[in-house]
Image (cartoon, rainbow, N blue to C red; front, side, top):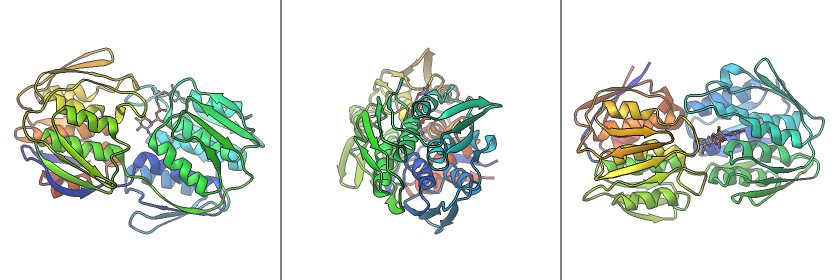
Amino acid sequence: MQKLVIQGGTSLSGEICISGAKNAALPILCASLLTAETLKIENVPQLNDVTTMLALLRQMGIDITQDGKQGVELAAASLSNLVAPYEMVKTMRAAILVLGPMLARAGKAMVSLPGGCAIGLRPVDQHIKGLQAMGAEIKIDHGYIHAQAKHLTGAHIVMDLVTVTGTENLMMAATLANGTTVLENAAREPEVTNLADCLIAMGAKIYGAGSDTITIEGVRTLHGTTHRVMPDRIETGTFLVAAAASGGEIYLRDTRADILTAVLDKLREAGATIESGQDWISLKMKGVLKSINLRTAPYPAFPTDMQAQFMVLNSVAEGTSIITETIFENRFMHVQELKRMGANIEVEGSAAIVHGVASLDGTNVMATDLRASASLVLAGLIARGETTIERIYHLDRGYEHIDEKLTRLGAKVRRLN
Ligand code: UD1
């Protein structure tokens, strides 16, 4: 298993390009299930989750060509295998995204239940409830969702809570349903909008993506198109926090400030100077880092996927802060590891109270989930001495070439086998 060894204490400085968004690429790859024509996708990040999704789609019968860079062509002339097996779904929960499109196109789907995962229970009841409202017959048997519907029918669906992949699954399914579907209390995440833009370019009729009410008028068929994946706002935010926590100065290309407002506001509150243009963001951190309170919530509020990284920032900031996690019930697993590095953090229910300390100390730590791993990398960058991070396969699920990008910014990072 690979490890990352970081020699801490360097301020990050320089310029890097931001990759395409994992959370937009995954549903957009699944959109290929909805058409017999070729879907060309650009700016697909090279990540383990993308490899898993491509393997899943390939075993369903989709013909996939990769250009060795960030381009992928998918042609689903016919679907030969309508099953998403446990082995794949358990490594990547987003595999549930094949359910809606597969059912809409082929009238049948069998998808393993994702089960529990490290950061919480994460049920898929809203996905199922929505598809049932559209006329699907759904049975849960031996850990699998068995879904069937000769033809889905448009429905008015009020989601009990805001779910990103739930909204995406139902939106994809509704594109080929008979009649109009209205999704209320829909997720407003920019990745939902990026998927909707792709579907619209494929001939779907979707109105209101990016708001909490999305209306989809079903069409008979969708066609191929070329679509570009949006920049990864979480990768962007992670590098910005790394620069702020290390007292650095960085320039990020191929990204967007308009989808990161809550994160940029918090970084300014912490004392960073931020500038941005249409496709770039720069950050300069001079002077004292200030503690900031934050509370995660669905977009456009502060993203749960940035919570762990900001906890590192607060760990070495002046003062005490409260971080409240409202999306996932068990997303403080990085706390124990950060405490081993000298952070002063107490957890009470869904809140973490962080008392800033002068510095962290390098040691051996273990990555537990994707964003927790990112926080350990940030902690290693600012710690005194050497930090060794084990189980970095979590990191490679969601950050493209992270060690290379950090090295370009002056960090001392080595990957060991
Ligand atoms: C997506 C993101 C993930 C991010 C999360 C929240 C992708 C591939 N992943 O995950 O990076 O952390 O949004 O922004 O886009 N829930 C239910 N029932 C359901 C569905 C969800 O109770 O049917 C709950 C979950 O347990 C969780 C909350 O709703 O507590 C939000 O989850 P959701 O938005 O669905 O997360 P994902 O789409 O899995």
